[in-house]
Image (cartoon, rainbow, N blue to C red; front, side, top):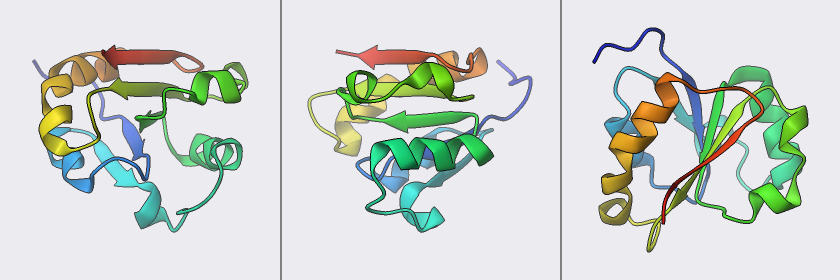
Length: 112
């Protein structure tokens, strides 16, 4: 399936950078590469919303800690046994599918 348009994605610092290689066709960078390591979730999401369309994290509490309705990006929460790449790989097809039809101001849980 061909993507209509690449999605600009920010990977949370808890996720392995190698995950980005599996999201082909998208523009992917990480919190670390942006120089935002250690920035708390609220400030991080505000920063991300200026340059990115999607934020991918494993933080399952994010939806309870932040008002995601006010941000113009989609948040994807990967629910796996761990954040090791081997545990995240099975979630990539569902993540890719959801990215193709991402909707701003939404949170999508994938896995678990």
